[in-house]
Image 1 (tube, rainbow, N blue to C red):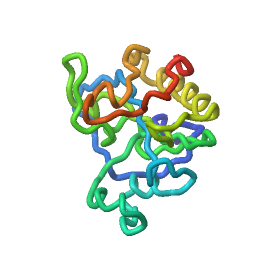
Image 2: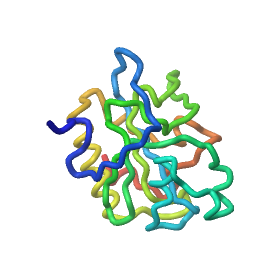
Image 3: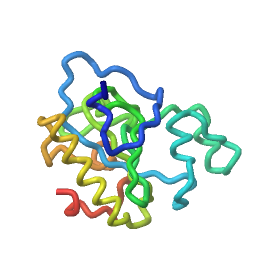
Image 4: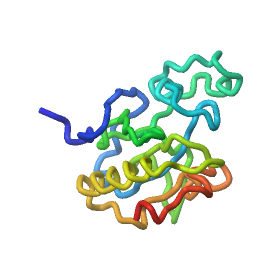
Length: 175
């Protein structure tokens, strides 16, 4: 039997950077992030390796700061629109870090994290927006408590610490 919390149109690569959500948690938020390793370099497996704890930190000087970091989003959307899932949506992925917005804290507990392959200094592709919009629609069917007002950027919940998805992210393409 297929797990309903693994999206049908995704390639599933399991990450152990997750845990059970707190009891009685209502998933009602989606957090949009962006990532590229190294910054602004795409079409490699470095993000996948980071989320599965297999990144060789000797590949690039910027990776040294990632030593012993354990993170993962639920989902990752590549530049060509491919969707990779690392964590079942009913689990708590370690994507948001220290977070606060509208008097709520600890967004990992009640949100779905979606990483866009990109940079705050770059535009996203039409294929990514297409996949993201369809993915959000599928997630909202699983979690009807998610409203458009709770689809936020990482910068919204970690201001001053995070800037993603950045000024080039076109919110109107997903609403």
